[in-house]
Image (cartoon, rainbow, N blue to C red):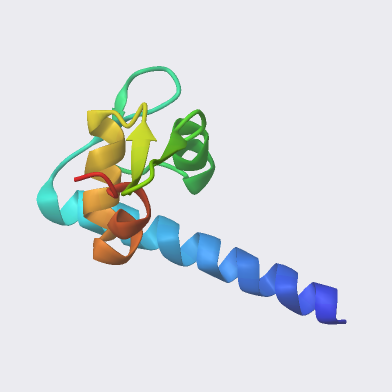
Length: 96
């Protein structure tokens, strides 16, 4: 029973993220490229998650400072993060 509840909760979050991204794309009249490199204003979250594969965090620690760099973040990723809003941006835009 508890596992079913967690699954339903995950699907709800997934759907809300997809709805938010599609709404913001429609509001701003922007598109992103889909799997076959054609512009779309109605991407699936599955595609968006696949798009973000390969992005890595590099943690650099020295005696005086520590720095976190986001590697392989492309303009399409920045656009998606901007459309999803500041709560999502803060996870990836760490290094300014």
